Length: 306
Image (cartoon, rainbow, N blue to C red; front, side, top):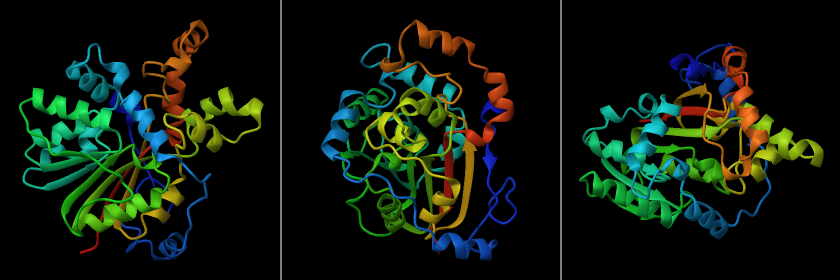
């Protein structure tokens, strides 16, 4: 399994497998990316619509065997995405102030608490917050959770050692503002750990085949309209680096999502004999070997300058 998710790193200077600090080591490239303006996306995501979507199905609900079966959800999450603990570094967070932006059902948030982190969690969805709160209470922890907006964090400047947001900010109407808010509430030297969706990706290609090809839509439009909540964005690595221009020591690691490999349980829109056949015949071995650069997930680690 680890080989499936082996990260593909990105080097600004050489175009190979690692990006250390683009601010200091890759000066020429830094000048290009620091002036970069991210690609425009359709405006006007309705936040009430966004809330309703995630209230109706908090992320990961399909893996709950019963209302409070959070153990099954955690097992599925960390089995399908085994790189999460290494990326988050839960074990190193004891005593650190952590803000998780977009807690969902609270699987990762609970790990921060278990590790001894002083963690606060927010989400735009009241339904998700309720499940995360229930999960923590069943585990014997008192959570500090709130319904809040990633574009307008209700915390003073320089409050947190870590801001963690896994697969959340690309659902916002203003991703750059979310990143800027994360920078604002981080202490000097603090770390941002953010996962964003990559363009292009295998998931995007499959959505384009299903929803875009015959309708004259681009891959990005297919993702925007059909991947999870309305208005989901995807970005190239260059665009991500441009959005992270206020940080230093920016590192990108590209990995497969469960959707890229069709390992996840199909959502309701992909149920039926036709999709069962696709899931069973999908050439995972070839994808793992030749398509690592098309993974949907990019794990971004960056530091706020001291």
